[in-house]
Image (cartoon, rainbow over all chains, first blue to last red; front, side, top):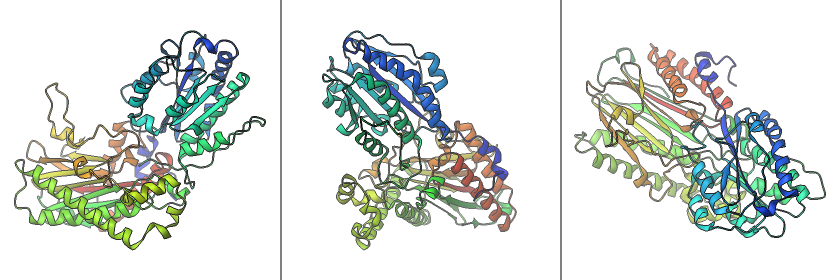
Length: 250
Length: 306
């Protein structure tokens, strides 16, 4: 076991930096989200800083930052850059539902932001796989296939842990499964009152999975998360219990 | 293992080198009871010193990457030594052709070693294969070479030049006689029409946990190489190679380079083999703590001092 004083390299060890995991939220705020749905999203986003801080406390080698955007007729990034949970508390402002469902535009914008030149450059020496959480309640109203094809070439996206919420009967689960790469990562929410609860649960699950680097499991972080999603029981309280996952850093 | 030759008089003596290397098992691997997937080697002759670091891939399906990195070190050393002993002239006019031949030789021999190991030890009796998902099993059955995936960085330092061969992530550091550190690209100091530094060795495609690898079918086209003549305008004191787990511990290049400089000075100050042993133990201790507090990854360092 290493001694604690660091010896000759003590000063270098003091410089060790935590790696950063960025959680990207993409929320549909089209007109059909009006009322209970958008209200649940707004409330959930006020809760997530505290959830992220708790997860980060148990993962001292990782920072977690938040980047959030809404899409309707266009795309709007609420965070000018990824923010710490404390910064995010002061940045989030309640979103109003209006307009169309420009998922393609949102994917294009996500592709631009998932780059060292944009949102993932402040800590270039250490990034963990990002988390991507998407919520939508309807059919995309723009071309989403080409933007998704481009996004799938992005190495950050390829390695990201991805989850999508399909809210209500009109949500296109097939499209969301295409975005996530598997239908297992799509959560159907039939009761709008549960949106807040689901967002909190998935925030904890994704951030915990993404910042846990020890492992004996054979599953990838995405597989681990998919298993968590599949075991959700609507009738029971959510429990965030993420098993150890593999550090797939090469 | 220490490779020491006339270290007391290495200053300004062409052909006198000190080389050493170390690989430690990452903190996350200790916890998960996984083997060290890094490997490194160092050696020298009267006329040159060679160092190699290799990082076996850590994903679940790379079940034999510790073997892959060990093969890469062993084969790389043998190939480079044969190359250096047989080459009559290596300079700006012919290095691309010559080093490309060397790279292909390394890849071919590595693949032969992998093939032999696979034929001797099929996946059927490998418990790490048995626990893989069906998709990972299928991927390996289609292409068993993937199981052995590893990066590869080698540097050769002579009295007149150095070269670096690089496939995948990891870092090469050139320590100049004025005690500053540059990457080989910075040391090469060639610029394009827009005044931007040409990045010959550094692969800008490599982001996050995506790397090129010996296990790729097109590995020969992914190899990067740089050759620099170390005349009076580009004097070099040492080369230090590290696997990516080390730079991933730090938030800035400066913090990383401070560690590299510290490692260099630790070895530079040694007067005898006992002190080198002590320097290595101290480095091992430091790297263990770095891994625990930082990347959690296996860490490797190889150093050649002129």
